[in-house]
Length: 195
Image 1 (tube, rainbow, N blue to C red):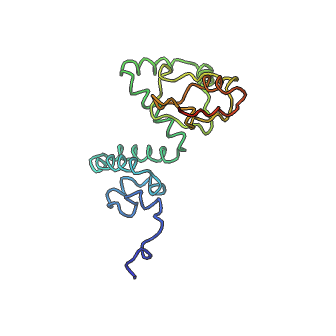
Image 2 (cartoon, one colour):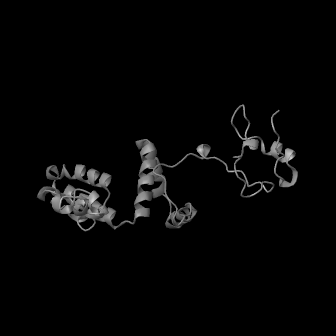
Image 3 (cartoon, rainbow, N blue to C red):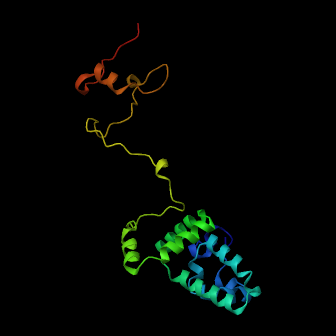
């Protein structure tokens, strides 16, 4: 049974899913994406699509634009995953500003002294090591305030599953207090027989 299930590979490597591989790119794409060659097979599929779309215009660029693109690719490739996530968040924030607002903020920043720039950098929110970053910043109004844990709640409390703990009309669990009132000190309920 050479064609049976035993001849099918048992595991598929993660790299085989990250197509196209570097060797599958056309020579023109490889030339355009040369700075990413070492990391290409580790880049996610959506990111590869974005880089490939960028490389489509490479042939139309002049030498200065090509050098600039390759320099940015090298910079991007040298960033850690966390730094890339932060860069994406910064880009999303900057995209929300109008061009005049961006210009005003940049000019205001440029007028700061080196000492003031350092103080501003120190005021930046602390980065949480290992914390996952959101693709888009979440508004504080959308976040739910988690109430403090109640101390009067019994730990390891189970959901009502026995017949005497379920309301026969609604099939919902009876209120915990009602069950406790009928059965003080956790004693089993008295069995009643229908007459």
